Length: 617
Image 1 (tube, rainbow, N blue to C red):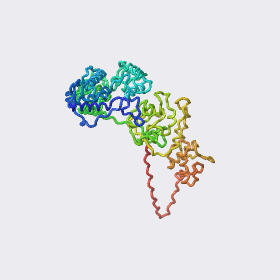
Image 2: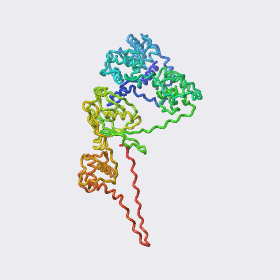
Image 3: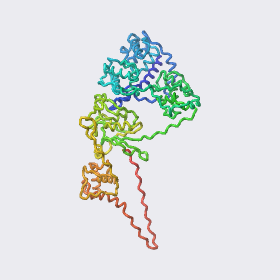
Image 4: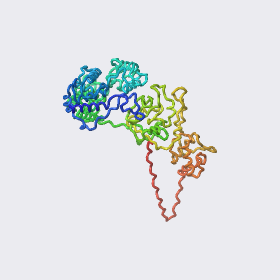
């Protein structure tokens, strides 16, 4: 009996690890951001070693040993039942291991919430539901973090406009009823488990959305399913009479009717030979991974929507004894991102002809973490998680738009908002861009945060660095416009003058003029490009002289015997152009050797080594 209870708890814990709910694995500033659009926590990958799991038949044997628990019973199994009911907030009595009136009432309430006969006795089915439950019913009068999560999710979907208080009152009830009506549920205003499953699903219908005709959209049959079933017939398969829609992800530790349905189908396909027990354990995991491997998919062992459709709805599925489908060639990740803490600039790099990330695609002024709460320096790989809104409960329920996860603690997101409203931007947050201001996240303008949200995906490497040199010219080039008075809309700025075509041989004629601090124009572009070619300047070439350019000019002037003022006069321009004249000077004709003399052999100089392409920094 104890062995059964342990196994049930293990399955329960494995199932709850991927349970739905805002706040689980809640990334953001110091782990406090709750993505309002991410209704589900990330699915954990199935164990890579199936041998670490029990067999389905072992679980089946143990399940049959579960006894009916009722009033008057005592023992460890009653204690485990009370403990689980307490975790679900159904039981508030002592953990005594004695089945008395309090335990009976808790079981009875649970049965009512989950549509079971309210006997007050914990039969095997009731116990299975208790140990696999993810939600408890919430109604008017309840309070706490669970209510906050419901209010937050309802707000993101457009149903709730009140305060995220954690108190289940009439406003929350009214919003829930609207949600239930819109999503085809009984409009009770009570957050029962079925309602919470629908609420936190990615496909939950928002207040202003048009509901789908079916629970799960049927894929376009053209190019996905076999129209005439000829391929299926040739494989000896009997395809279902109708499309079987995907309902939820299944993985190690899952149990129930859907797992039985999966095991039955995999048996028909020849991939599974274990018992149809409804327990997702070792043999089921191996069968799922084999199907994925045979059909050119990543063998995660997780039954997601793509895997489910291959198993149930695709007549072209590759069977165990057939030639496996080739794994699709991975598409190169198009971008890499560098977050420059020194200059408070985020730069997106594209791939050059050699596949290196060296081409700047977009530069953005940002706010990284303060020195007290610094951003996480290092290289991070994006996993594709993002949300249109997120909330920071720890920081006064502040909000941000276009949240893109970097790691478990931080993300890219917009400047701060005081509410889920386009008109609620915190102006001081916008004005702080270009300075350390966040609790670790990388804040951007709304436009820039949306660009990352729309264009940067899974696999992108983000390098957060504090070792890059100061580049005042770059910061000046990215200087943000003021906001229009009384709004959160930036003022329109003139279209920047395009960088003139650079030709090293066309040195500017300054005459008596000097290029000094804040000078701008095509002559400055030429000077900055030429200084870079000669190795004196590594900053941003924007056609404006600031401290970075002046420092480079001073170094060049000192090396060439010119008064090091940092200002560019004609003498400095001529010196910058001088190496070009030497490089292009005509070669002198060799003097003919006197008759009878053998010309001296000239040693051929070693070729200059080609420099390696610059990195993405």
